[in-house]
Amino acid sequence: MSEKLRLDKTDRRLLRELQRHGRISNQELAERLNLSPAPCWRRLKKLEDSGVIDRYVALLDRSKIGVRTMAFIQLSLLDHSDDNIAAIDAFVEESPEVVECYAITGTEDYLLRVVAEDVEALERFMMQKLLKLKGVKSTNSSLVLRQKKYTTELPIPESD
Image (cartoon, rainbow, N blue to C red; front, side):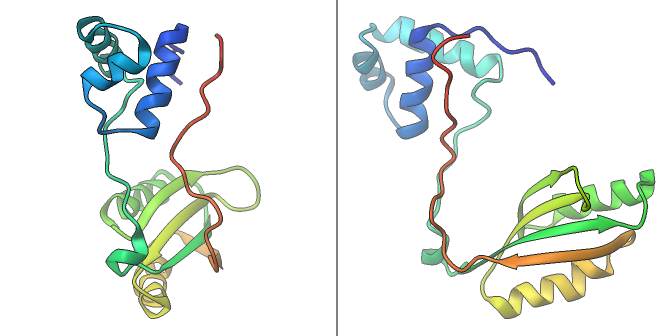
């Protein structure tokens, strides 16, 4: 874990604004924070350089690009050998269908969020790729029926 960066009230407001409005101009951001543009830019640069801001992305509506199916897949390994873990890590990195992957505690070892065009494409992914992967003991899948909330906006504590 990396060390927590101390954020003041203005830093936290800046981060909240950016999470909601990622394409906001520095001028508009400065106005919303009651800063002049130069100090606003310096704060933003400090947050980028320190890694608090990891990257900027566009969030897509997956249904509008034909990616209508989503599932959560819990995966158990045969054992926790370095080879099996490396195989899973490489597989996750090279599989565009896997949009999130977490090593977890409990009876399973990993939790994957997987997207596909349709159920048939999800089945092909599982049967032809995931279940043939070296070291996979079992999977347990949950197909998403309806997405109730989706955000990447993190809650930012009011104080350190």
